[in-house]
Length: 388
Image 1 (tube, rainbow, N blue to C red):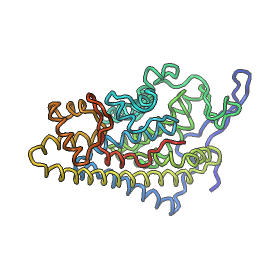
Image 2: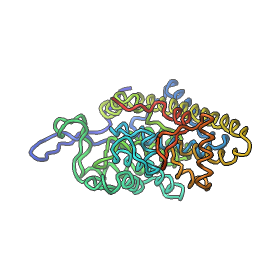
Image 3: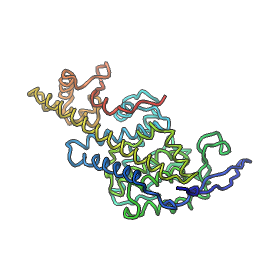
């Protein structure tokens, strides 16, 4: 259907240059979204896929171990979209105080994403509302102290930003000027607080993501906070309490379409095309996560049977194997802490697991050896190739 642009431009002049900045209209869209049979079917499919994924936490053993890895997968994928070169292995190595294969700041940045998501979810579980204050808190954790100093972590910007180009005048998109932020963010917060009966959670997450990316309220980190907001919104409204969905995989694989559709919403009001894309992203990501989780749990169950057949050494080997399901790359020292076993017992268990072909040593040194649960990490790494 024909719509007006979802916002308006304002003239801004800074440093002798005049340019147009975009100020979005408040949510929800006016006129309302047109729910064609095809679009409604896509959202139904996405909700069904989400439900199946969410059910993993209640019906599958060791689902919490899968959750640990999936959160880190989403953190790596979301950071890749912003140009970070850290892989999942780099993040896992960084978390056990090992040297990653990329600059340390790249791995630290991805680790902060994990911490930011955990902070937001813990606040929501404690009864704190999804609000501008919580978004600022998440941003503060995401940027941290070292890298984020010049980017005012946890504070909304007081100056102009732009996307693409070298200055606002030649940018691909210019978000609202700083003096318009309050007028944009106040109704945005009201929309987030709206009950699910008014705007269903999945639709709310889709609309809010576009609005946040358009407002671009921070000097840095907007893309990652915008993707974190999806997980936080779904958790706040009870649709996906545990962050098993790694939707950034779909955004990464269809990056150009993703950006084009965001711009289309702003310029032409075509919310339906964006909603079709978002529903497909949720459906395909949830389906992939469900499939991966089942394969991971099937692999671990199969390996448990092989370990059980070892006899006396099985108990300690099973303890190490369980720890490796949570941290599939680990040092013998980190496994001692995770299992509570003595160093000699852990080392003996690792020898047995190596003989079974379950574990592979990644290093060739006497102390601080690093081990990988190879087949497990291979499943997690699907779709994780770094952009070229």
